[in-house]
Image (cartoon, rainbow, N blue to C red; front, top):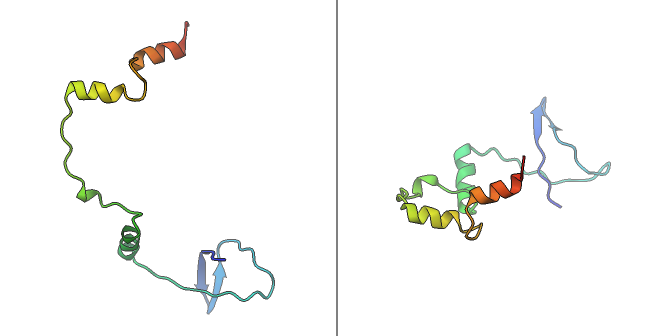
Length: 91
């Protein structure tokens, strides 16, 4: 079982900041990490869990026809105004 727990080092002792499910006298293995934000970003990027937005190319302007086509992708051929009016009903 692997559990990550926050702790604080004080007067030569580690004090857990989060609750743990351990039995009295249970032996545990502790790995202490002190990574910089840059190191954390590098590890997340290497694992594919962080995207560098500076790599994204500038977007291209969509034509009005393309905007209309994209706007209809999820609602069929009915415009969103018709769906809203139907949902609201008479009031």
